[in-house]
Image (cartoon, rainbow, N blue to C red):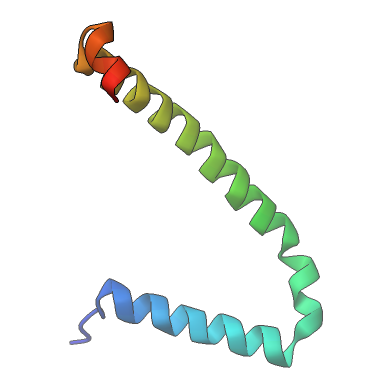
Amino acid sequence: MFKKPNLLVQILIVAILGIAVGYFFPGISSHFGMLGDLFMNLIQMLVVPLVFPLIVLSVVEIGGGNQLGKV
């Protein structure tokens, strides 16, 4: 049957399709502006809860203030 291409090939195919659609149909981008804003908001909602605990855990794992001052 049909074998699914790996992730790199999928990304390249979609990137080429996106460039082609943007080149041949420049007015269509206004319809997808809301999707881009939604995507960026979702990324921001994920990054803050993931990065903040990593910073806190790193500071706690370093130990006392002496070692923290060296960093």
